[in-house]
Length: 352
Image (tube, rainbow, N blue to C red; front, top):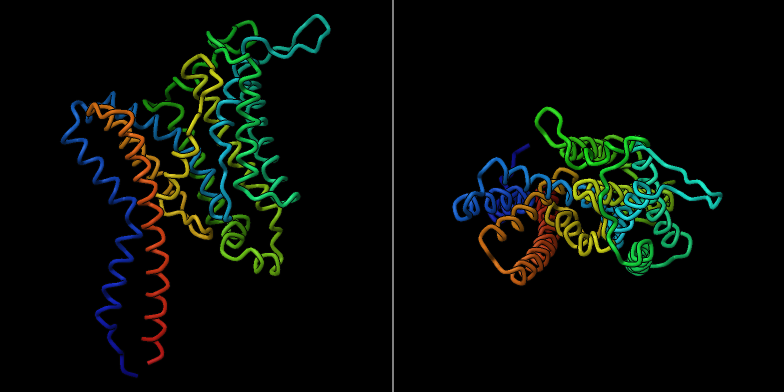
């Protein structure tokens, strides 16, 4: 058998495809290098910690969003879920739960965190039920819960802020501020939380039947159903996981600020979508990596913080963020077409 060399156009397509697949890492190097040279004090330790914290918050949301997008869906409610869960945190720290019997139930920090996580998961469950059982399109279902969750956050305080969330030693909630501001081995707690959540999500995606089912649903939902995949359960899970990630962000922000405002999390869903798409997650479903999403979150955060340090107008920051999202989608579509082309070229070369 004689080996047939690949045509030059096939080799060029393969090289271009490799570059497109590595675009997130190239973007990270470019934005980091640019702001390291152009933005004053960008390379200081204090600023690095701030950027990492901002990136972690975006990454939490983007990890949950990645699973949702891989299945071919979208979750527009994550920003509002952040606001709602932040307000739930504030309510529980300040007031507890009043059963109307002349006394109230108070909670320690762990119990507050557990209740907040359950609220986020419940919002995700509602999204999943609307999409799978009532056949509501993901865009419409999560748009509806976006408004419901934001409205509930506003109603909880009449639009006011819950201040002074330092906790009460009598109830064991005095450690609440440590969730967002504490450190361990020199790293903020939320970085450790990102490492744990990222590893768990990557393990689910790569090493478990559930992860394979998530990709199968996004690649070919009907084919996945015919092969025995419980499509509805998979979809409900990814929305619940997205709600969990949003609740985690709401809890962290309330802890960091020691205050909760109902407007917390506005437009956060855009950052999450941008980070996921920039990280290589295909909006058409079936493709995405947790590691790429986390790198994409760092790109978004470095870009945002670097522009602030350079004194760029917030209006231009919004324009630039929108351009990044559009560019990421265009490049993703180009990658999909190129992958199909390379596959055809490889099949043609193999048949010779």
